[in-house]
Length: 157
Image (cartoon, rainbow, N blue to C red; front, side):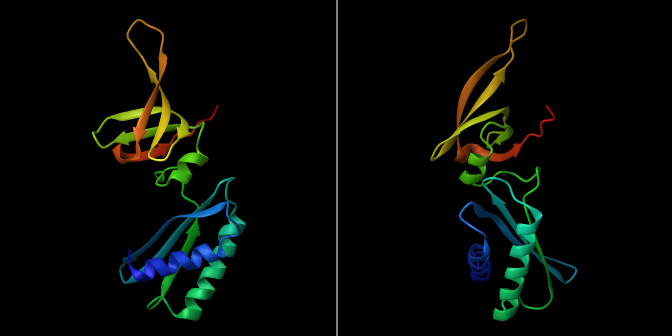
């Protein structure tokens, strides 16, 4: 991790409202000479727009005061969208009970309900359909290292 990214993460961490809030990702990208600093934060009980605005304001002020960003930049502070893959144990825990789609490193795709998060893996209930039989659910344990991408599935039930 670059020193600048680490410094930015420390600044963001300092300005989060409490322990229930956490950093998901910090990313810096340049396009056509324009630098965008994207900070994704989340909270165990959900995140509101006012928190994003407060964190953005505080982080911006500290970045300016410490003159950490070279040149002009755009700062974006938001929550990860529904299409943003889960990438931390804490995000998985927040989504227990929800349906997820997991793309495994083997290429296999699994769809099921996230039921438990352990130190190095998750457990999910996967529906198994056999021709001519009623669908059954099977508990599957997936190590984090075997998960390439995990997306929470939107449910309108």
